Amino acid sequence: MLEEERVNTPKEIIRDAKPVIGFSLKFLSGDESQIIRKMEVRDINFQDIKYHLERGEVVLISPKFLENSSTNTGKHKEPWYFTHI
Image (tube, rainbow, N blue to C red; front, top):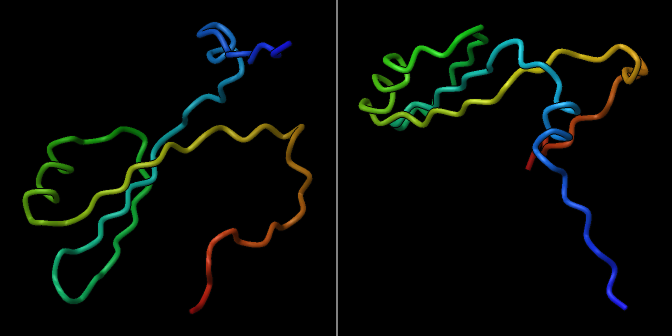
């Protein structure tokens, strides 16, 4: 017999979601310099995003969540990304 796969309903997703307190924006220049500019903002200015896209830049947007102190153990975690090649 196959086991049913449990899927979160929208109410469960909303209840379990952490509040978004802002956004992290990263702009990667489209020229040979490959400069990355980082910003943390409370609200996204889409006119600014459009401006960067029209200049050929790559725009990365990620939410910043309110940290839950009960799940934060205070331990420093190692980065999950490559630090060198």
